[in-house]
Image (cartoon, rainbow, N blue to C red; front, side, top):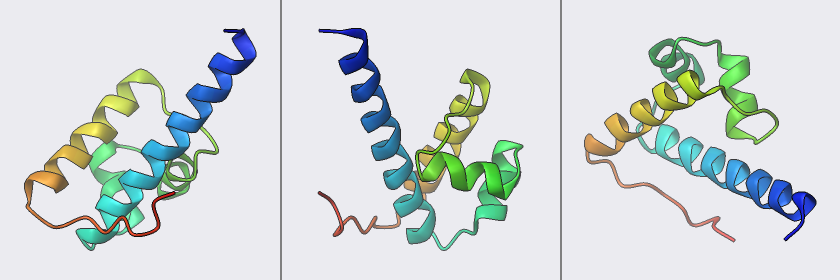
Length: 84
């Protein structure tokens, strides 16, 4: 494996995580502002994470994942029909 292929895989994983996080957020009828407030960031930044345009730092990533897990624990079904 080359560094380039490793980076490409990482970018794919980042994009997929963002897509799934968005699906969870929408399934729980949460706005970007709601989740951004939980994570401690602004809605524009959260939107970039969901679209895979940028990646959060480790602390923010853990907060974001914590918010996703909390929403999943609420028991809402996640719509993933647009899955590749």
